[in-house]
Image 1 (cartoon, rainbow, N blue to C red):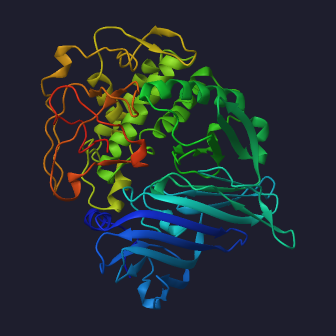
Image 2: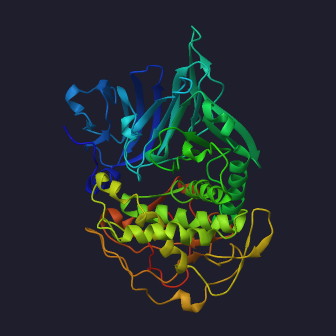
Length: 516
């Protein structure tokens, strides 16, 4: 039996074979002991006759069928389903029974001790989607997902897309089936299914439906107005900042979940938050300021992490460092907490200092040979130290203005003072050249050039006639798997057209970031 792990080399080989993935996933969450998972996976193989595998951890697999042929039970070894003799176009069907968890691996099930109501949610980062359905569980093999979820009648189900229609009741009226619209191409780890007796507050911002959810026993403590206000301010800030509209359609849901082992997770259009963020009593404004950082962090991920996605977990640092940086920047510019960078220095940066003094410290850009290794890196180095490094790399001595959520401009109070997109401003010459003392080397990959002292700015926007990106990173050609982009778009149609860069075409501030 293989371990529930995936190495970087295995991911490279599989990514070189598989493309054009579409999933139809059906989950039956009506049992209290375990749940039924059925997957139909359609994909192209770039080498006919090749073999590969899909990831799946399940209590039982009752049927596996590849291109109409039923596979032997030996094809499933407990954590993988081996696929041989692949065609150019393939269809895989897998029917399994999977386990609930109480440690937020895969599908988490919670019974509220206050009222006995049941709440379920998924958490897939970095490598747990295969505990819920069969899939190619790595960040650079994106797929289109269509979820169908059966739940007891009266439950609410939330996912990455809006429902395709009202839930369909079963014949006896005890169950309901929720069908969701297809997603844009997503990596497996940012897909999500949340179900239960959730309390919901609805709102709308421009053409985006906003939802705030929590369990019924916390409904009286939910201060949805403040959370929605921060969300709207973030949307209005990030769209011009990134030069690209909110990328996940007409809805954005934020769900406060019980027993989370982290602060939040950036599932596309279905953010999950630790429900400790719901204040049970009166708190200081400082506590509200610290809380507001998290919704802005996860909202920044919609563009940087979900719209574009790292190829492998070695680039987790930039995914999280940049979201941490942008959250504070947006908070200082667009919300009622203009001194957010002061708070950052007092909290996040001191966290980074403490972590850096421990025996467990590591480089910001870490070598991640397999998925198990990444668990050591969700820490103050990856988040706070990385964000601290990114901030001065873009700071200009000049004070510039930036559009706020109200459409007006004000002087930058702290953080990067680069102006908004479309301003025609270029960084001072002193920040456009000259390497810093920082560099990185990753085992098995060509060493990157040294970091430039500031990120390069992309002249052309992500669409023809676009206003441009305020920050972006270039790449250098390498060999093998990393010769392509280290960050991939949800869809080629969303990629910037004819990008051009200032300065040298090769300097990088991450391993191999590009726009394809």
